[in-house]
Image (cartoon, rainbow over all chains, first blue to last red; front, top):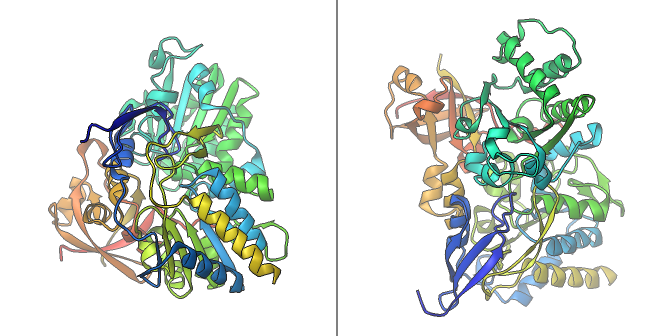
Length: 435
Length: 114
């Protein structure tokens, strides 16, 4: 470590949706690396320590080093000449870059979708169908005395969720922290998170909807048959106990994760949970919040929503935005072989999409933007290496509760930001479309 | 009849830390190529930690290594794997009109040790 170090106080970790903004980063400016991340969790420490400046070309075309200008020209030509270009990703970049991306999609009459479609996309559909009784994490910290996690494992995916927001912190009306809260965990197995819970309910795989619907009935005083245990794995007695706790708490919250959105029922599961939260407001105050994964996936929802009116899966083919999950979501467009060019920003679909989608991705020109080589960048026609948001660039991200937070970068990168690249591509695309 | 179990891709801390180093690095690839199986199922299938097994679903297959689930989170009948290229290989591409492929609860046939 050199002697040329600084400390960046109250920096923000953008690894997961918690977006913790109380990091004190010790930065070695000569070595261009973060040597210490005070307050960071295990995931945050890895995020800060592993994002150094590595020796990758700033741009590649067909696997060969290229100038950034040439790569921008190539990317713009691909997007303008495609008949059905798709843009996907954006959950690990700033809102400022995201707004440029939506403009590009608009100019090229293309399709824009975010990683939300394979994350809480089903919840996004449910929000539109059922509504959302919502709150900020600050409000939950200060008021919630019943905290329910459903289909999620924060201990491994969002390690500071418990200690910073929802379980152990003392709040204005929760003066004794965890002692004043009842924590319930619902999952198909006792995860690493389960020991935090006062009550753990192990639900049979694929029966979350039935449990949620039974709870809705119990909350309203309707009878439920004891056979519910055979179907769901949870006894009627335990369900009645939970329903009573929900109705009698001062302020309850349902946090829900991929265990609902990635399984049988998808948006019906999320919708059932949101409806349960809404029902409970006849008796007490109850809110529901999805626990979001990537650092700015919530920002992507917000930016795409305020620019197009829809949160993800948006199509501009007709010159105006249309929303239709299943039709304009990226997995579907690739599996059906409809997309003829793909622009992938700060995500890696080639590592987490179904095989049929990846096979089509290999057949079409792909443009990628990522701070590190990925499985997707390896198959790209044009691959940009970018500065890491939050570490090398400032900007805005949204925490999982839709609260915007400004970034405080730690050190400069030789690579351009997503925002800068997107703006240049947008300008070039606009020029090409005008001719 | 081959044995079948439920494969459940999940997030793990090690997956999260290793992807920061890079998805092309050996650590990430190892973590996303390992399934956790309950002790009961390992004994029944005559598997030991580190054995390679073949999983098949929807006409596709992957080869992964296995390790024992922690006793406190042991769940017979279910295998857990860190979400990544291996688990995605077995995912169905039909999103049922939602955009979301059925990414968890994949019924797989097991062959092994191989």
